Image (cartoon, rainbow, N blue to C red; front, side, top):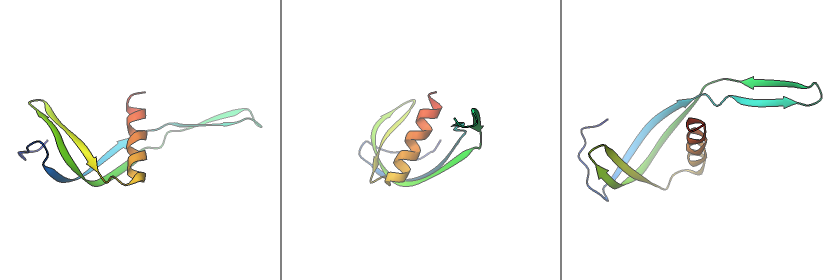
Length: 83
């Protein structure tokens, strides 16, 4: 949440942190065991975005030059958030 007033096409630098629990499942077929790793993971994103839609309930941003590692970390977060 922010008091920052933006217009469509404004460019903004953002920095945010996301935490999630990916629950990685590892299967060892030799021992016939399953291990669930439930350690939390934290993602720190520091990038630039462009405001592409602004409505009363929120905004939509387009990431500009997002680091490939950060892109895949965000994809992982979204995958586990929707699971």
